[in-house]
Structure formats: C-alpha cells, structure tokens
Length: 242
Image 1 (cartoon, helix red, strand yellow):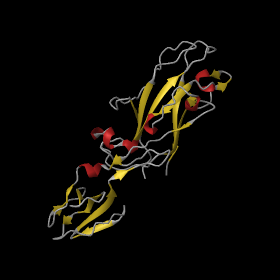
Image 2 (tube, helix red, strand yellow):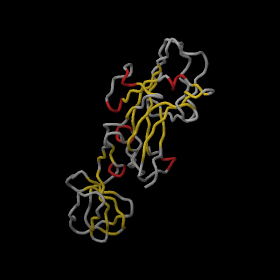
Image 3 (cartoon, helix red, strand yellow):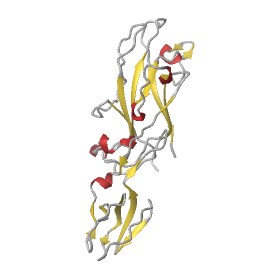
C-alpha cells in the first residue's frame, strides 16, 4: 500500500503549516504561548485528487530533535530546547490534560505516544445511495442495503443489479456478486488502535475523519538557566508503516 501522506494543520484544520513554525520570543523562566496542531494522514482535498487509501501510521510518537536529527548535545551544535527537554506535548485527541506536568515532556530524554480515539467514516459511505433492483451501476458507485448493516458496497465491475437483493457480506475485502455487478465490501466506520493514525480515504472533514488525525498541544517551559539566542529545532513525529 502507498506510504502515509502527512500534513500538519492549525488548530482549526483550516491552514496547512508548510513553513518553519515560530514559537516566538520566550524569556528565561517563562512559558511559551500554547499552540495546537492537527496532524493528518491522507486528508482528502479535491485539489490533491486523493481518492484511495494509504498505509496507516503505527507506533506513533512525538519528540523534539535538533536540525540534524540529533539530541542537541553535540559540541558545536548545542540546542538546549532539545537537550534539556523544554517542550511539553499534550495529546488532545486522547483526552489528555497534562500539558504542564512532567508526563508531557519531550526532547532528548523523552518521547510521547500519540494517537486518537476518533473514528473515520469511509468516504464512499458519505455519498452512498440505497441499493435498487434491476439498476445499472458504474465502477466507483457506492450503495448501502435497505437495512443498514455497518458496511458500504462499492462497484468494482459495472453492470446491472439483480431483480432481488443479494446476500450482503459483512466481511471487509470480500466481493458480493449481484446480477452482473460486483461489489467490494467496505466497513463504514474505522477506528485506529493505540498509537495509530489511519490512512483510510475520508472526506477531509474533521467530524467525519477522527481516525485520520491527531490533535497535539505544544508548549515550551524555558528554565531560568537558558542561554540567550535562537533555538532551531524540529518537532518529530515518528512512526512505522507496512
């Protein structure tokens, strides 16, 4: 399957973050402003024409690293914000409320598991019509049975449906034969496991796509001993996929 396609957005899911992000000027002994990010996998946008699934992200964690990917502790490349774990990450999509606590620290010494309890409705389910007998269907059209069963059926072989309803399988990946039509069986609701971000196709609306993104709130707590000067670092989301 295609590798994950990752996008960072602001707290409202409205502006994609493509450029380096500025956490602002923070005095020693102070806390930064609080910033919330939504990190998507395979968010649907009409301009991207992304109508298919991609691989889910597994074992997802967030931390900070210096611009070379290191821990900010090498002579000549000291980055105190990474080395000394200034940043905190609260995973709002898991219901966390620990932003000011030690459990949310990230940096050279800490990473944090991220994920979501949200559910994604498969994109095809949002435009599916109720199946009809003796009707011509084309590839890509989606139907649901007259009695909802939690699955959507997507036409993969065009043709005409039978005069009576087929037996609707409820096993994802199976094929339902219906007259000269063949239907793919797809679950409507998809919920990730712990530490996962789904790659299932969605309609890009947060309310329908909760399994495809995480929400993380970030804040820096700068110690009194901090050196003056700019700190360049990365927020790193690590994961694996198959």
